[in-house]
Length: 106
Image 1: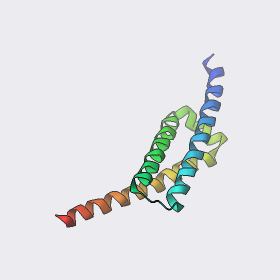
Image 2: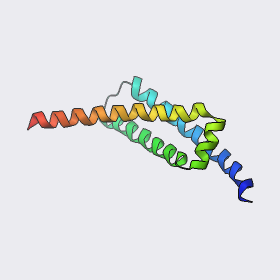
Image 3: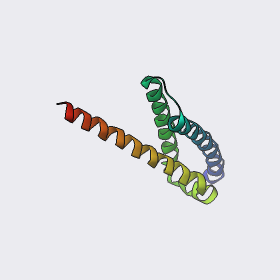
Image 4: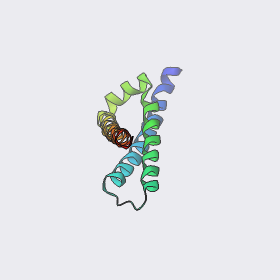
């Protein structure tokens, strides 16, 4: 019985992952090209992106689903990982700038 349910569970997760990735892309585009008039709004979009990214990572944490996705939508799998890596690089840059500014201020 579990084998029959697994593919339908994967289909549901796949659809959720597609929607989540679409949200991530929209937020990435806003973060990359938007003209922000307040730091609060920019940081709010960063938080939303982070939440979407964490949601995607939770779905991808299931080894059985990861295998399914690699067989059925490898582009989505690598796209999510690439966007997460780029966001991680940006976060690391901001963390380092913050640390350096704090260090120079002392």
